Length: 121
Image 1 (spheres, rainbow, N blue to C red):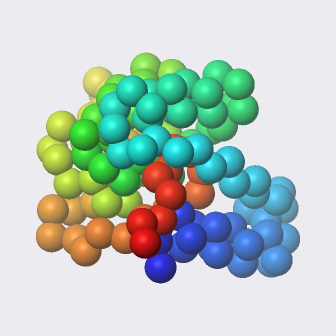
Image 2 (image 1 turned 90 degrees about the vertical axis):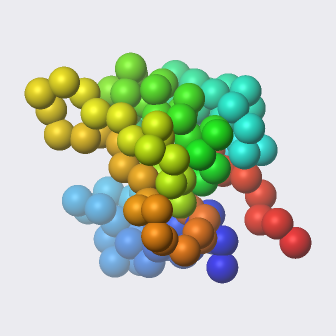
């Protein structure tokens, strides 16, 4: 199962139980192509146009690094379930980390949202 599919399944389950804090969760999926420029465009779109408050993704470190910089600058929480490059882990001064990434020993999977790449076949 891909991270995206797993996240969509989790959202479906949360919504079936009444949502999060009694609000339904809406998934917005964008294709980052696991490359920096499309990932940056997707992150800016979901933050600026769709007004998301958090991003689950990016899943590739080379795209996660610039997305985490945008998320931090725009005060949007980003959780990267599979990126392992240390540069994808940014923190704001005197505040808890606003981005998170998978530990280096994790097994990659994939997850809602914004940005994501389509499942590979």
